[in-house]
Image (cartoon, rainbow, N blue to C red; front, side, top):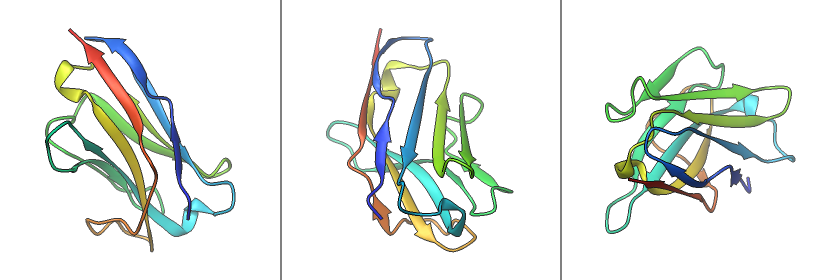
Length: 120
């Protein structure tokens, strides 16, 4: 499942970005999916997840109220809408997928990531 992320870039504090994750060869409806991020010198950390059916979403406390995870089943695309960005959100953002209806905390397939840089 070669996931491909896009949408990263450089944005000022308070700005917004929308990340996308897709794999044209896979039907995402069979997978629970999530976004993680890796900041320089830090361990990879959970950001947000959505169940395969899309009925449940989960967020890290640090992004709750600012980030929104969603999925477009017709396009087999996962999104992360990021608003009110802060310099501490600067990281490589990675998409991950795990086969099954519910997010269980870890992903089996990973993308290469997309860089998000928030300037102060």
